[in-house]
Length: 168
Image (cartoon, rainbow, N blue to C red):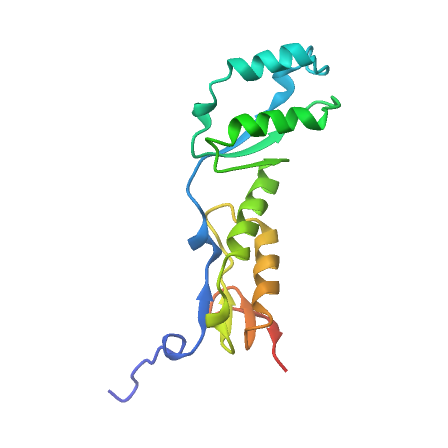
């Protein structure tokens, strides 16, 4: 064939990293303690401790938990610590914050443990469009981790990538 179509992307040395591939399974839960407070605003220690004692913590098995209080109540640090101590045997991860902060924390652990030495002097495309909730912070963490190793870093798809970094 004289006009044979050649897939130059498939034949290139480009390496694609899709953060969605690293998305860990498990339910994400926003644990709002406002319902455990008197009138949603006052933490009464005795009542709070009773709520903790009565809670079936095994309901949170293999879940990712973001502890929060959606009211303007002042929550002492020990309250979150007490919740965390009871959740720890069951939950995969526990943070204080919202669901976006939870996803960022999950990905921070993943990226910190990611071995990027195999990307030495290679052109890398970080795939952008995700169907799963990959936080924007994960892309920043990944690009900073890859920079010392990569020959170049691009964002998007091979057919329409945006150059971000090129080793000099």
